[in-house]
Amino acid sequence: MTNKKETATRERVLSYAAEQYGTQPEYLWMTAPEHAVLRHPCGKWYGIIMKVKSERLGLTGDFTDILAAKCERGLQSLLLTQEGFLPAYHLNKEHWVSARLDGSASMQDVRALLDMSYELVTPVAPRRSRN
Image (cartoon, rainbow, N blue to C red; front, side, top):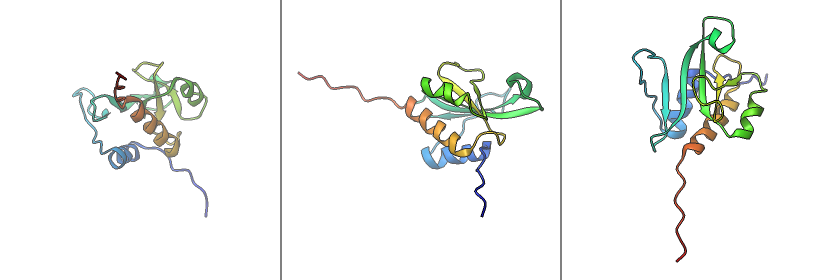
């Protein structure tokens, strides 16, 4: 039996978000009906799947699906050295990173990125004062 890596695709990411977090994609833009936002229950976005012209990403081909997700600063620079990851497209490049959903990134890496993003937008409970 071969150890084949599970590639990340739009469908697998949306399925994982639904199973792991109960998140259903939101399609917010009439001009970009294929863009899917993944929203945390607190209201913040933790992911967005976009179909982008490949040339805008410095790639060849017509279009590429990407997942933009929030990322810890230190890990972001490491991810950008790996195949399948790019600087955030159309979002803050300091806090977000894009994963290609065209077979370049493994689903395992994309799941870890999505989990991190979900945690990063999760509100922290306020500290109780000691009086």
